[in-house]
Amino acid sequence: MSLPPPPTIEHCYRHPDRETGRRCTRCGKAACSDCLVQATVGSHCLDCRKAAQPDIKTRVKYANARQPALVTSTIIAINVAIFVWMGAKDSSSLTGSGSVSQQQFDLGLNRILLHQNHEWYRLVTSGFIHFGFIHIGFNMWILWQLGQLLERTLGRTKFALLYTASLLGGSAGILLLTDRGISGGASGAVFGLMAALAISMHQQGINILQTGVGRLLMLNLVFTFVIPGIAIGGHLGGLVAGGACGFVMLAPAWKPVPNWAKYAAPIALSVLAVAISVVRVG
Image (cartoon, rainbow, N blue to C red; front, side):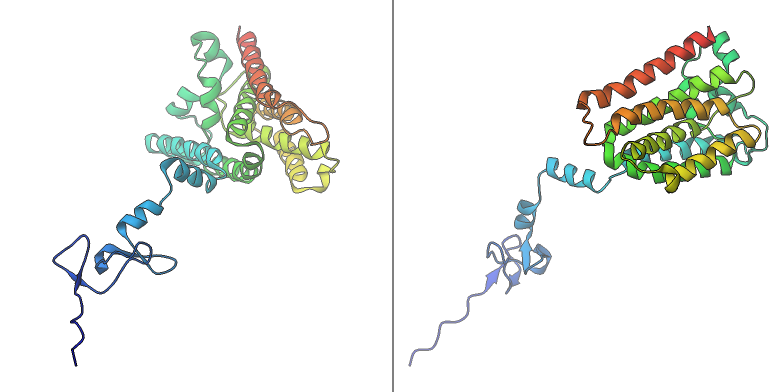
C-alpha cells in the first residue's frame, strides 16, 4: 500500500519564512498570527481588512453622525478656553469678585469704548467672556441642554446662524440699555436659544409654562430683573433676536417655510442687530 503524501507546509503570504496553519476566512490566503485580525466572523488578513474599510468620505460621514452636537461642543470649548486663558492672566477673572481684569476690559462690550475706538469686534468677543465660575458654569450648562435639542433639529449651519443672531442681538440690547461698565457673557445667546425653542413649542400648540423650557425661561427672566449687575439689555436683546429667528426657523410642519428663509432669517437679524449697534454708538 502506498503511503499518503506528506502534509503541505504553508507559509505566511507576507512573511515567507514563517510557517502557519491559519488562513484568512475571507480570501483564503495563508497568514501568520501577526497578519490576521479578528473579525466578526473568523479572522481577516491585513489586505482584506483594508479593503473592507469605507473610504474617507464615508468615514467622515460616520464620524459626523456620532457628533450630533458638534457646534454646541465647539462653542462651549471656546468659552471655556477663553475663561481659562483669562484666569491664567489674572486670577480675579475666575472668582467674579466685581473687579474687571485687563483681558475682560479688552474683550468686553461698552458703548463709550466703541464710540471712541470703533472696536466692533467687541460685539462678538463680549459673548465669550465670563465673570467667575458661577457665570460660565450656569451659561454653559444651559447651552449644552438647549444645544443638543436645537442643533439636532436645525442642523449645524442653521444652529450656528441662530446662535450668532442671538449673540449679536444681545450685544445690541446691551448698547441700547446699558451705558456703564464692561458687559460680557453668553447669556444673550443662551436667552435667544431658549426663546427660539419656546416659540417653536408655542407654534405647535404646547403651553410652554407647563414645560421645563418655559419654566426655565421665566425663572431666568425673573433673575434678570431681580439680581443686580445683570445686563438686562443683553438678555432681552438675545430673547427678541432668538425668538424672531425661531418663529421662522422652527415653524411647524403645517406652516411650511421655504428652506432658504430658515437661513435668511438669522442672517437678516444679525445684520439688523449690527446696524442697531452702529446707530446707537453713533
